[in-house]
Length: 119
Image (tube, rainbow, N blue to C red; front, top):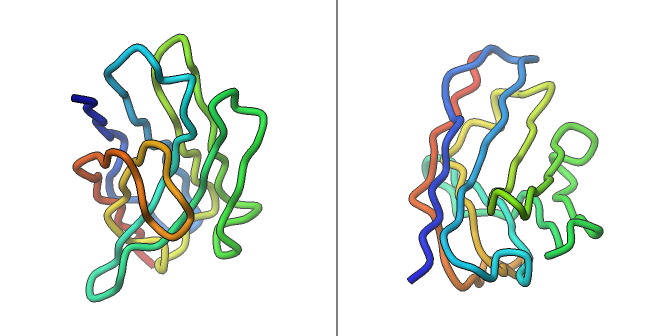
């Protein structure tokens, strides 16, 4: 059973930055793409970013392109989401996912971490 544990969420002012981390259990971390999704109150969960197993390929939602950066450290079984120039509309619970599609199908999901951006 794979476990994904997110951390790094919190309260930040608009224009600020946060870095989310997702630590994964298991021995095959580098074999799979990883991704971040988010769900705001009253809205459906949406794709944020995805990174290939090697880290050589990344994909972003248009709403975060140029502000968010996804990266991974396969030696630490960890994927990161660096979020800069945060906006109030980025407020959501952020979820880490293993081998996700952009439509939200994934092998495993983390429990989520809350990000709140005050304007």
